[in-house]
Length: 133
Image (tube, rainbow, N blue to C red; front, side, top):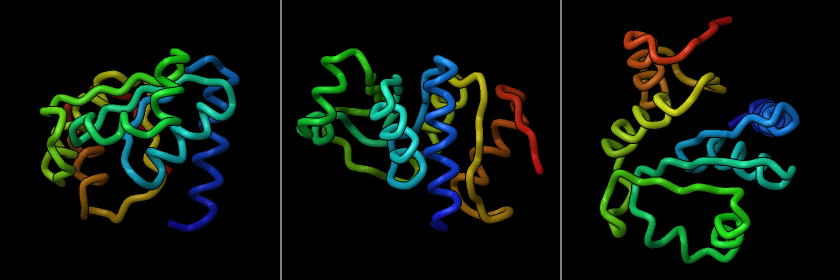
């Protein structure tokens, strides 16, 4: 991922915090984690809907501390010990979009990959407002 995407993601999450918006993410590596971490480190709140079970992630001290501080909510539609699977991420995306008032796609290859598929599926379902540039 290019650094401008990382910077934009962190700044957008900080802006969400200043606007008292909760950051909703898929909890995945990359922009999901960057947005979540930026929101939490700036005093905001985040909800992560995971494409895997909760068993491993709640073992991380910083995650537990954020949960106990009522700053982070973790959700998973999967069994607690299910590992990450790409097809689970596609299913999880439906929950991310359903809980979100706004969606921002930082980077995607046109007509390729899970980000593109999830965003276009959401557009077709008209669940969230999108703005292309």
